[in-house]
Length: 127
Image (cartoon, rainbow, N blue to C red; front, side):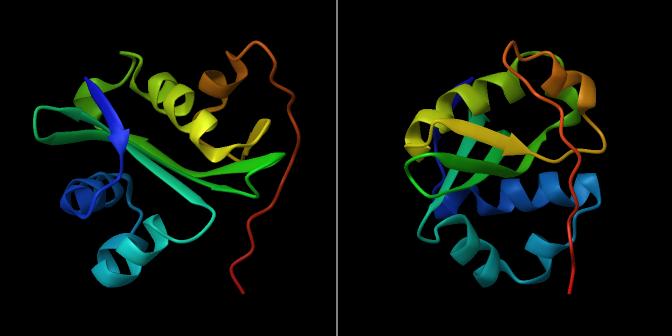
């Protein structure tokens, strides 16, 4: 597995992961997806097995204190092999932030496995 920052060549692989998760936003507009993954304050990273994108993480940050893991997905064939943990470990220092917040409804056990986690409730609003 190779970890690196997102490049435009990874977009199709990221869209495929999002589609597999039932997340239609990135696939609906590829230019918007690329702009989102490269916007100021965004850190986007991928995990690769050869040329195959096996995972990605997309974080928003103020660059100092706060970062937010907005999206992360791992290919179904690569789950429970350390890809998600490796993506967070690689991406977090790149944000410049001291902490990472996340909202999840599907991976609570994964995030609870982190030593310094604190569980909070939250909401995602689609105006």
